Every structure is written in C-alpha cells, then in structure tokens.
Length: 171
Image (cartoon, rainbow, N blue to C red):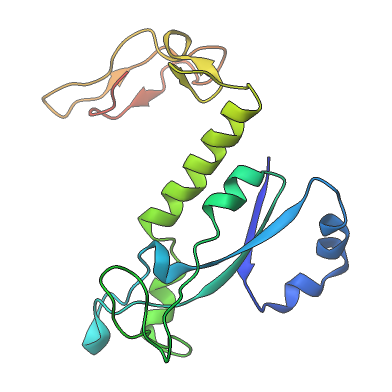
C-alpha cells in the first residue's frame, strides 16, 4: 500500500504522474482538515488555537482513506473540534514550520487505517505485529528497568547482528 499527502490545493496534484496514478481503479483520494486531528498552534499568542490545514491524501488503501477524511464543519473561522476555537492562519508565520509535523491523532489514523486494511485483506490476524506472528518478531523481551539496552534477536533478518533496542520496548 502507499499513501501520498500534500496540501489540498497544491499544484502537485496537477502533475502528470499524479494524474496518471489517480486514473488507476484501485487509487482514490480523501480530504482531511488537520484541525480535526489535533493540529494547533504551539506558541505565541495563538497557542492552543486550531490550525485548519486542508490536506489531500491519495492511496490504494480504502481503509486508510476512510480514516483520513475528517472535515471541519465550523463556520466563519470557528473550528468544530470538541475544544472549539477560532482557526489560526499559518501562512508566513512561525506556526507554519511547526505545522509541517503530523499531529499524533493523524499518525494514529494512518496506522489504524493501514491495520484495518491489512485485516480486511487477510494479511494480519490478532496477535500479529506487522505481518509477522508476535513470537517470530522477538525471541526475548527487551524491557529493562535500569535504562540499559539489550540485544534482541530479530526474525527473518529484521535486525542485523548486534543491533539493539532501547529499553522500554515490550514484546
């Protein structure tokens, strides 16, 4: 599966290669307003205020696109997120640099959508991490209380010899 994202009105949507991809029967798009996924100003006088940021996604995963379709229904600059607020305009401000990062809820929507798609396509089942059964991913739990790292033996070449995982991961 793939996921392509860019601002809703970006000129790149008019590129020949993008238009050709959109002609494929298994490819579609969705539009999301990032204020609905928690995007907000993080500093200055607008701190905590929602940032609208309409974004268009293209994918061959219908389940990802379904998760990436929340849209703001607020009127006159007001945001419909549960916390409310007035949308902040970010063009040409310090806020715009921060808004290049996905909010946590948007990342979660992408991952949950991919998970839903993999389950729908019978690529994963309960008890699997990624597309491998849990017991094939790691042979030992790498959670240590003293902040040390521990060598983990990965399955099927997922980790190289001697690579380590930070403490706090769990199996």
